Image (cartoon, rainbow over all chains, first blue to last red; front, side, top):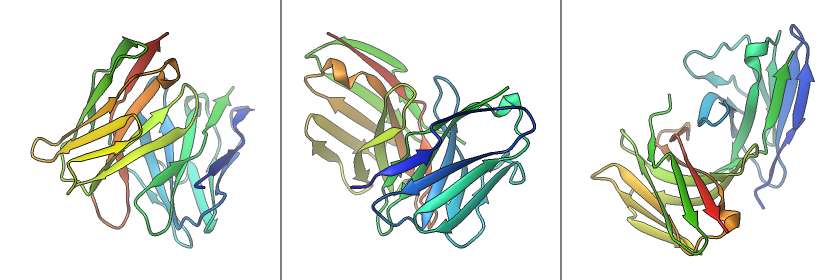
Amino acid sequence: GAVVSQHPSRVICKSGTSVKIECRSLDFQATTMFWYRQFPKKSLMLMATSNEGSKATYEQGVEKDKFLINHASLTLSTLTVTSAHPEDSSFYICSARRDGTDTQYFGPGTRLTVL
Amino acid sequence: SQQGEEDPQALSIQEGENATMNCSYKTSINNLQWYRQNSGRGLVHLILIRSNEREKHSGRLRVTLDTSKKSSSLLITASRAADTASYFCAHNSGGSNYKLTFGKGTLLTVNP
């Protein structure tokens, strides 16, 4: 159990377009999900905490209008990168905290390349 | 912000040897977790140790926690080539948000 999926796994887009990434907990409920960004050979940087039914909490320095987060159900959170630019190219990873536990389970990540 | 520090940043060993990775943090914690990441992939949860625990085992993994020194270690015994990956510690400082702060990670290479 405790599987988290992300879709798409890889996306290439043009500058100025928007890209939506989905994060799903497949076999458990997750009121809280998290979105991270990871640069090559670096650690994970928390972008925002996504809570079902309420607004996301963004970390300092992360533009909420740039990275739109929606957590519409207990198993799905989406991250939309709006008006993407080449500097948004990165590896985006989500995690889902199983309700009632402290453990976060991570998705396989989405590689975003903005041309 | 990422406040955890891990050492070494990179570790290269032979199959069969033990690998020890260390992690330090700066705040009080509720728990500390270790994750593994293969190149370009997501993170796999390895083990969680709570602030009131000192040692925990899971298969070939042994994790220790010293809250007085704000440090933790991950020991992998009898390493295998398949253990080659990056290993991250992440701590949760409590509160209702369950946020994790990740260390910088250790890249472990196990040579066959």
